[in-house]
Amino acid sequence: MRTLRLLLSALLASVTGASRAPFQQVLDATSGKDTPMRGGDDIGVGHFSEWSRATKKQFFVDWQAGRQSEWVFVMGNEAGDLDSMASALTWAYHLEHSTQNTSNPTKAIALLQTQTDALDLRPENKLALKNSKMTSGHDDLLTMDELPEDPETLALKLRGIVLVDHASPLRKWETAKIISIFDHHVDKGTAPDASPRIFEKVASCTSLVARQMFDEFYKLPEEYHLPHELLELILSAISIDSGGLKDATETDLHAAKRVFERSQWADRDLHEQMEAVDEWLSDAKKDLDDLSVRDLLRRDWKGDLVDTPSPRTPTVSLGFASIPYSLDEQIEKTGFGELFHWFAVHAAWTASINTDIDICLNKYKVKTKDGKKKKIREIVLTVRDDVRIDKVQADNLFKAVTEALEGEKSLGLERWHRAGELGGRQMVWTHESGAGRKVIRPIVEEAVRKWDM
Image (cartoon, rainbow, N blue to C red; front, side):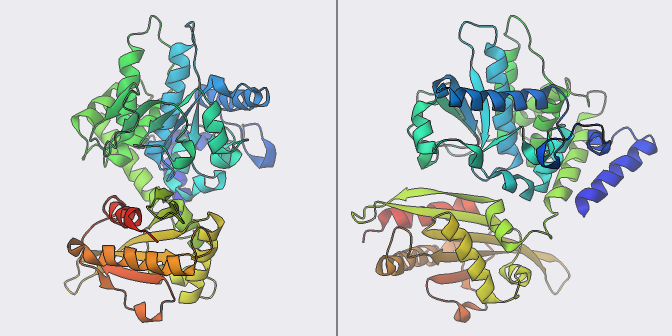
């Protein structure tokens, strides 16, 4: 696999004396010196992993004792990309360490809003965490499936939450007090009294978190320890989001410089190192050929409840998956290699998460007659009738969303070449507009908000 090739490349670089292998620390994980954990996992080494594991343990101890009100959850979005994860871990670490010698210390923990077994569906995350010497199997990270209490209930008991790489909380966290927000998307007006409350168009949200961390860090009466493993995780997130700084804003660049000069890479050239890290992570990110259709569906999925004016169904569950394969390629990955099996796998997945409407946004490239590559996108729409809405409502909602998408002329939607084989409340379109989730999601959400039946 590509990840194995990356490890071998790093080994070769170390043997030949190359000084710029960006993730040479990855080799530590193959030394066999770590202590085995349950399930064959290896305990992470270094201050950052030790802190993360100790923090997770303390949260469970305090939960058992009924002390949830002492804790702040720092959470990113539910897609669980590297930017979201690095932002949450960075700010949780800073919150705790910057207040540890004060009269009001903060207990903070990063909550990754995904399942533990879904973390490795993003190979770039796995590689970055391995470089940061975290525990294999992710026993030192807190994920959604490890919460000992329902989020709706826990939200009321917490001291508060911090949103990173996320403009507003998911419905299940909306009753929690929002202490701070860091986001590089559109400001939705959530929690106007939060502090700090930072919205800025940058390549990486981690840049905003790192900037604020250092602004506060240098004002402290005494500096706390910044482990290089955390610093290099921050740089990894900034690198992959900014194309190795080629697409960086001034904020991204300034944040990267401040982090870089304290990292173990400080004796190297900033731009060369960040380009190398981006290349490694981007190569790993593409290593998805072994993932099943179900894994592809849940790898980059975002969803939440959406309000409707319908007195019968005041909320509808809406989800979006982003997949870097065409539907034809995904069909080949099913056990039978048939269209019906893809929709069967898809139905089982959406049933497991109680979703009413699911949108799969596929993207891929095809070669044109002149040998160039052209980007193609697909939209796969399905509506269920077994969660919150009945068959008549589902038919009507499917019609409303279909008309909204086809009515957006800027998308230039064309029905898929096998659209005639689709079942009820299933539709697939192709387009070349370049519109992804940030464009498609508001169109669908608006249609749902207007739906009244």
